[in-house]
Length: 75
Image (cartoon, rainbow, N blue to C red; front, top):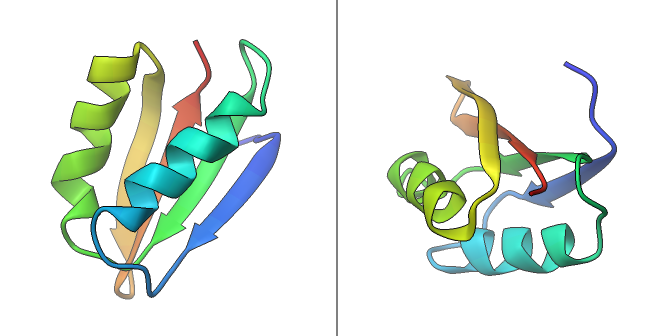
């Protein structure tokens, strides 16, 4: 999937992946896509909730080898 910016939030514990994601999205323009890589298992449930609460679109979510990958489209 194409993305405009990537955030590596590996090895960060909750709530830092969400905090860093919010900051990264704030520097982007509407319609751009952010790819987030996290290793905190809590992000698997936190990221969809964050997207819904902030109006951003969670385009895709997957997990592979202990990493959780998210693609968020800036509202």
